[in-house]
Length: 237
Image (cartoon, rainbow, N blue to C red; front, side, top):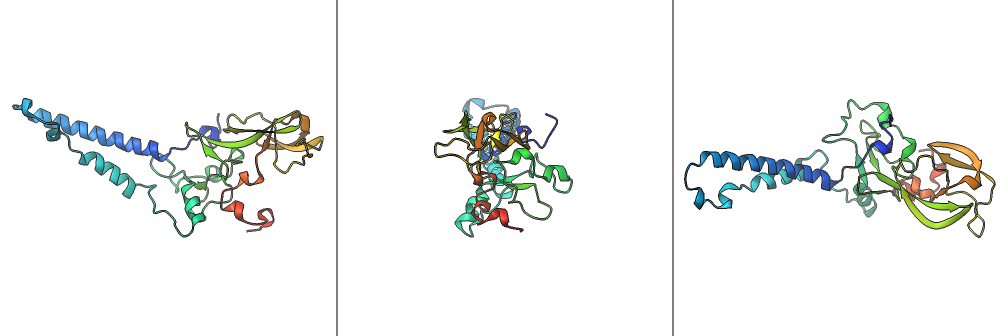
């Protein structure tokens, strides 16, 4: 609860929510303009038509300004299909209601254990924006509440099932999770008795019989672009 960088305490504000806020501001402006206009009219109220009071430019102007001059508004990178997909999966901690890059400290930019399977630890720009502009991991998705979910396969009595569950960082707490590289038999049963697992952000050794979940894929840790790099684990840069 006290860790503000924990993804259970952070949520994605999608384009729909941001646009709805701007639309609300436009409607409030229009409401004030209508009231001001009504207060100045002393006679002929019966002959008034809606278009005499409503000025739609206040709403259209607000929406146009949001898309053309907003802090998060950008031209899409169309260099190639990969750059286009990557740009669409980008996350920003900057903008209205967000952080200011000049005052953002090291902790907020650092990789957090809850980023595993949710935010790519590799794909972030260098310079002032490092750690503030991120990318969704390959299989991550955002739920209706704005929290990022990571996919896992359920494990029952050491047997890996085909059931896939998407969990938020909060739902994942306390779960014993095996890596996707865990050696399995032909029947999808965990072969070793003692394996490396993740629990509450720590990597520990534990009996395989206690494993509850297993990573969906080794690629789930990184983003779409980074997952295409061959022999990524051996790369120095």
